[in-house]
Amino acid sequence: KTLLKKEPLWEVLFFGIVFLAILAFAILQPLGDPPDEINRYKVAQYICLHGTLPHGADAEVAIAGYGASYAFQPIFPYMVMGYLMRLVFQFSTNFYLLSYVARFVNVIAGVVMAIFIRKIAKELFPSRLSGWVFTLLVVFLPQNLFLHSYINTDSFAALSASIIILACIRGLRDEWKTKTAILLSVGIILCALSYYNAYGVIITAILIFCYSFYQRGSFSPRNPEQFRAFLKKTAFISSLVLLGAGWWFLRN
Image (tube, rainbow, N blue to C red; front, side, top):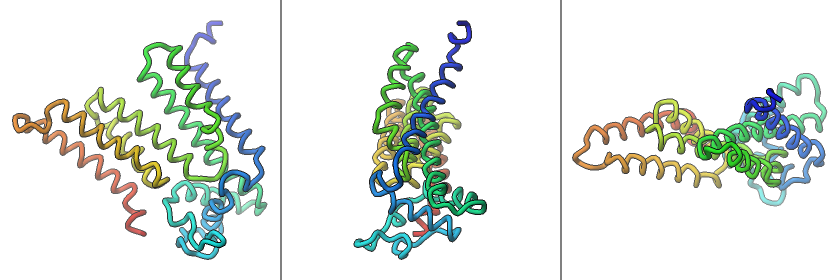
């Protein structure tokens, strides 16, 4: 009874259940059943076989009948999948095993997202009950579990959104301390390298960041020190994002 009252124990149990729930989805679904999974898998498979990143129009990754491919979009999740598959490929060339290795990357991303959702709940809700209700409603939304169970970049995008949201909540409270600024940078980098459709979260983060300094009068001529603080934080976060994600856009 004493152990069950401890929050960490409940959290470990919760994350274990999340892992098993997503893993069940990942194992039970036949490869190719989820939306366009086969064409997404081609990108990870190319990286596995060649050890390099594909050109978007390469025949091996092209979508039949279209000529384009998912390699034209940010592919960081496929890179993680592809190089992990390449490691496993040294021991087994079984097609189905390799496809489940790729899916497993998103299963882990789903669990990590659940960890960040739990952190968000603690920041937003003083009540433990309210925090757990929020956590369960977000994490066990069926579409969320499904999202992390097959080969895509959406899973990493959802994870990055949770990181960015947590960073924004903390930034509004601690005035963007270095740790919070780094957390925001990591979220933006992961989002930028995962999915164009999620970039709205990055724009939202920028607006919240600017608004937090506006609240403190950073843009007033009477507060040059606050304005310098705004510029320093902006330069710090922007530099990290450029270092972490800029290579993808330069390459393209």
